[in-house]
Length: 111
Image (tube, rainbow, N blue to C red; front, top):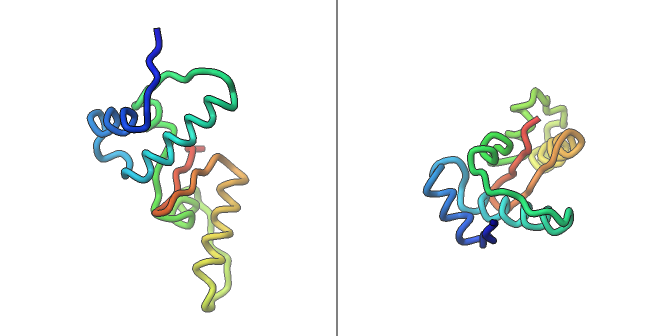
């Protein structure tokens, strides 16, 4: 027997089990991603907060995430450096794993 979990229930359950693991915007983005993945695959997924915590990590930026995987920023100094570094880091991450972007950061499927 399975129960459909709404976004609100997903967030509430996560906050009850692992309140400091992800920010609220990250949880909403993660729910949307998993819900879409479930529809695309046509398979129901089991809600397992611990497994999700092991699989995904939240970062404030793509640069921060990429640096956690030994990526080195090779963008040149200048006014646009930050946006170019973010773009290069995001490309590196997307080439190696699944990335969920949201307004205040990124979620990375650990690799």
